[in-house]
Image (cartoon, rainbow, N blue to C red; front, side, top):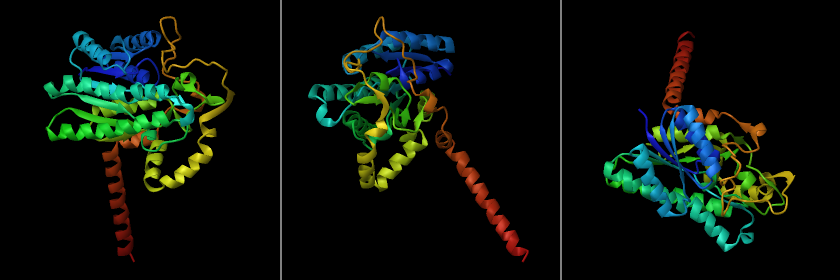
Length: 336
């Protein structure tokens, strides 16, 4: 059964890879982003994959633009079944090197953009008592790191407001579902266009995963929204778990290693363009696609992701192994 899916931040990175995956299933995909070139490329990807695509240029920091885009999506593609919030921006710098206007802009896109998307989706879904909202989160929404205070703050906020909304939907007995997919470091173009005041080129903290791994996690969550959260990548699971038990130790570790691990050895040229205020793939821009520049170092699969999607199968296997072990021990004892 095909669905109507809306994805914000769909012109590149995780949003682009997720749009391709929904398109390959034959779904109708509405693409929200600022950059025209990236949106046009995403439309071509989905059409080639067998889906139906609709480009909707909009800035998610504007509730009015998001609401207008959703109305066009429903008018053209039909009632929205799945809404995926991905769009974000960031600044790589120490907190005291980020201006008030820059921090506000990151918050308006990376946090309020999710709020706006969720508000608009619920306005449409709640009267129908049907639909799923997927928030693309991050391990950094649980465990903050240096040089990304604005982004980490936004991701923490997404977790907080989503948990509140989930309980409100549960209270009214709604069939609308909302879940979060916590991501690891992903090889997306953001590291080439993020506003950075670091001396060297920004990079994701290894291990790095390809955006298709993240996309598989998003699509699975959309199909199975009953869980509060999904974790993608062993590093995400390790980071969130370790922070629950050793947050102070991680503070000291990240204070020593967090600066170097987020930079390559390549110097950043003065005046490097950034996408904080305007997209870098406008009418005559470059289509960055889903991938960043770290393909040679990125993992195309994640055993942890497979395991999280097959919990019952693994549980059955573990129980079976335990039973077989118990029987073997019983036989050994009986033969004495």
